Image (cartoon, rainbow, N blue to C red; front, side, top):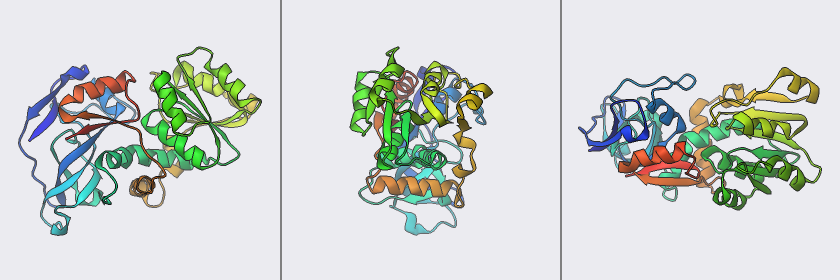
Length: 325
């Protein structure tokens, strides 16, 4: 089979398309004939040899990728042969997703309905599940004015749709005219380009006296700080990343003087429901299957994984980046 291999930390061009031995499923595992594999910004950082939170750079050489969708082509010892030929999506325990075949624990599999395509499933298994957890922390209601940073991104595009479904007023912030237009099609009441230096003023003008009550920030840096300044008294600021390179700067004075709350959403108890990560995955896939949350997807063929990483790092992709086989 073919797979993407990383032999040395560095730029996206270090991702090589190579022929490697077929993987063999062990006890309690299946081999998935991959049709789609998800790509994460975290993987791009690890590719450069840099840690991200609890994630440490891998031992080289390695095949990246933690989520795949496809068809079960072989089963290991102790696995019900009924899985053979089933369309599934799974989160992988030990990587190896950027490949034509991957091994997954049988307990990680979710069966896919016929009408849910592979790209959508792989976009929702982790990114969608994370969105479900963050939304549980945010508790968005019809009374809220929600500002979504990176609103054309994998998480942001789902936040826009979910906030709209909740009846909130939605402000989407994205980079470039095409992405701003896309955010409008997702249902945002206000969509602005963060590349315009006066975008906060444009948000204030569009809201006509209403104040933002919730910010979902995965960007950080100066843009995140500008979003914080738009929060009204008692507002909630939820952080889930810092694509700009630095987290949003927040002081205790910000919180005290304006009655704000600031939360690192990924560490909240709501992110771990009674059913754990699998419950979030199931919720996410159910929302997608019902058509309530439709992920934006930018696809690249497997052999162009380097281009996929470059587009993700350069913010040239909309939504979730997916490799197709």
